[in-house]
Image (cartoon, rainbow, N blue to C red):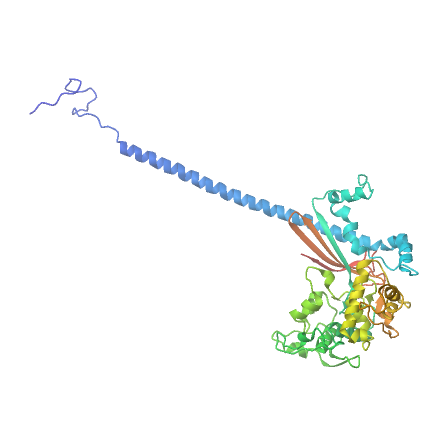
Length: 463
């Protein structure tokens, strides 16, 4: 046998050699590297999982925070709007006291024996500014010489409210009126609507609305639309027929026949309207007619011409010129003011111009109706003619008004639509409510009770 090679140290064997004299096994470097790589992967995976978990937790927490903040702001905005509604109702209820103070001054300015109701609702947003946005109104108060430091019940609320109040008797009523009997209401409403739809004029700007089929494939005339509106709120089940030439409203036949032939048939309500949107259910109320007559500007409720909350009479001072013109023409339909579109345009334009110059009550209702005197060419009309010249093209031709027309007008507002928007940050909550302050109001049977000092709410909607 060949001799074993010597060890580097010169010895034949090494103390650490195994029993057979073989040298010990060295550590496997490759296995060690694999273990270190697996540990690194585990650590990185754990970090990634933790990072994903923390990111998800942060996202869910941020979402919950944003949602909670939005809910908080929405709740604050809602109660700011509710506060605005109640403060506006209080302002309307205290108008008689305000009129007592400044009424004599206005009576002297308008040359009327007494002062009609003041339009405090038009100034509600400004008057209630200290309650709405305290910080923003401090400078205004200081400039007016008012010290707000001693005021109680006002302060920074973290938001504000915006008030828009309009009187409902500034528009034409299309529901069952409280001021007239059913027969009188039908006839007066039919004639007013006929004038609004351009029936007294030839040609009419609304002729195109009645010259094509509606969504159900039917032709609808002016008379059909008017009869359908009246049939919706009157209590009988007979179909209304309107004859504009005779100015007469009659009944006969079944009114539900018109709706039973629709693709989705339904019955006539035979009760007063509950909301203005309900008018869309009436036969002939197309989108074009809605946009032209009911809601010309969806963002501005003041552009609305029709109402379901009015008493049936139009306000001489705050009624829209178009509504006043329709009320006049309902009983003076053969006059040039009603049959000549140019004369009608002059009347509406002149009335708008007068109001833009002085937003104060200019006319008085009752037996000595100064608005009708203006229409006859007296009073304020004479002053304008003297200033502008009698041949001025801005002036309409005066007409003779029939007796009894004064009963179609009032100079006091008792029912108001309040649009109050609460604003907190980017959150806006709007409340639309109808406040009835009519002292003679009583709830319909079988309900009991009566009017309250701040009125009753007939409608409530929150968006």
